Image 1 (cartoon, rainbow, N blue to C red):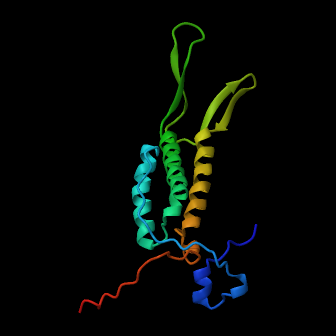
Image 2 (image 1 turned 120 degrees about the vertical axis):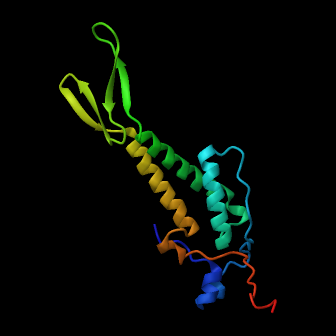
Image 3 (image 1 turned 180 degrees about the vertical axis):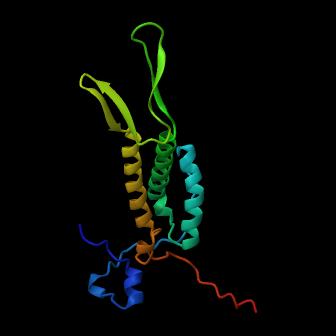
Length: 170
C-alpha cells in the first residue's frame, strides 16, 4: 500500500500542482460542526464532544466526515471499555464436592488468567488484552486520518477556514 494522496490545495501551496493531474471536479467542502448521532454509545458521545471540538478548531472537520468521526469515537469507547474491564477481577463459581465456592482466576489489572485442565494449570492471556490491541490499532488509524498525530499533522490540510485578520478591527 502506497503513501496516501496529498490534498490538492497542499500541492498548490507547495508549488507542485500539475494541471493535467488535478481533478477539475474535486469537491470543496467547508469546515462544519457536527452533532453526535443518537445511536452512539455513552462513551463514544463523550469522545465525540472532545474530538469534534478539536477537529473543528483545526479546520479539518467537514459535513462529509460524520461516519469517520463516528468510527474514531466508537474505537475510543471500545478501548476505554476494554481497559476498564481489565481492571476488574475475574472469578467463577465452582461446585465439585459440597457447597459452591467462588474461585478467582485473574486478579484486577492482571493481563493473564489461570485455567486448569487435564494436564494441570495453564496461564492464558485475558481476552481484554486482544480487545485493547484491536481498539488501539483502530484509534491510531482514525487519528492518522484526521491528522491528530504529530507525524500525520503535516499531511492534513484545513478545509474552508476563513482567515481573519486580528488587527482588522483596529
